[in-house]
Amino acid sequence: MDMISENTSGSVILMGDLNARHTRWDRTCNSQGRWLMRWATNNGWEINAPPEPTFAAHNGSSTVDLIVARNTSAEGTSVFHGSWDGCSDHFAVQSEIRISGETCRSSNKIPYSQRSNPKYVILAEKLYKEKFPALAESIEQCQSTTMLEELYCRFKNIILEPWLEARKPKKTTLQILLEPAA
Image (cartoon, rainbow, N blue to C red):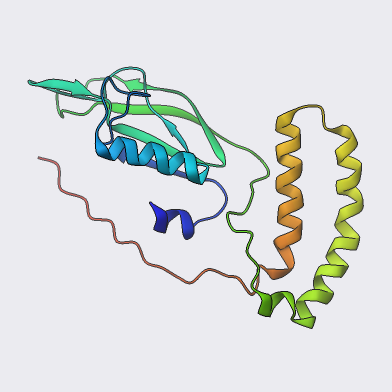
């Protein structure tokens, strides 16, 4: 999860059978659920689960199919029943995903070597002179915490923009292995 968090920015949605049980979404806890809850809280991610079990077997049921999201909202998460019920011991999960127009970039660290590079400093000064006046006007229009959060994200994105070219993430390859259906 840390690798995913560090190598992504903006809105991210992860969904799957995480085998993580926590009393926030299930009737009991396991070590994976406690870890996931602590990790999500510490890293600004939201965990969404349906109000009913997503897994059912002869020895019991649990809610382990989860949606973990950053800078987005998953609402109305529920089990989606259909003609496929009984074909697997997991139920399909559905959710309405809302992505805000402005998202905060995940990292706010600008290395000293870049902060002191004249090319980026000149670019930053020009950009700030262009974009900060409109941002100042927006402050007066804030009427809710949501608007204030969006304004903060815009401010943070403007601050980081001159250094984005130098901070392009290293290319990483994620290999996904799926087991064939039985």
